Length: 283
Image (cartoon, rainbow, N blue to C red):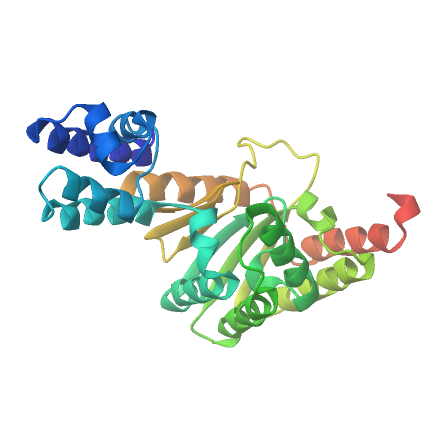
């Protein structure tokens, strides 16, 4: 069971405790709140994540309004580690990009791995625009794409600071994932990748297709200064800071690094992808 699910069940147990101490049956509480009885059950059993409004209403209905603050703090601590994209993106793309910029600027050394996309900190405006537009469509988030693109471009300023270092790994397959409506923009993105790989602050490795992979390239992740892991899944962004999680992801990154090529080898793979994408009939 995940830490997030454990935390959700712990919060549910506290909600159940408040209800039983108030002498209310689940049906009675649901009726007083105007909810379906099933919602009370889902919240108490950790099958649904409460909102702040849910917790405040629950505390009020059980006669312990002062408990709301503790419940909200418990929820906030839980969401620090697991934040659904739907919630994260509710404030728009710019807010998400600004948050990532703060994390990246606060770190001096970043280790990252991406298996199906060019990392955001390396993206061209056209590539970023296509990605953020797709994300808005997928999650129904505010379509402040242009603000998000500008904020994502500002994140790249860190690459020109001498004290900053990015150790990036990409699976070769990511070079062939076409995110832009115009194929020429994807080709331009590969050109940009080659330029950034030449910076003193960037160490880029490509893991070739066809090599023996001791771990599956399941999802991308970033390790900030060896003390925080940020990992993306389809539905959520995970922020992991336990010693065990950090050690696992750092070990995974080091395992992947052993199978990557750097320098001229990485440039050859990028050039090969560029040539094939420039001539789609050869794909």
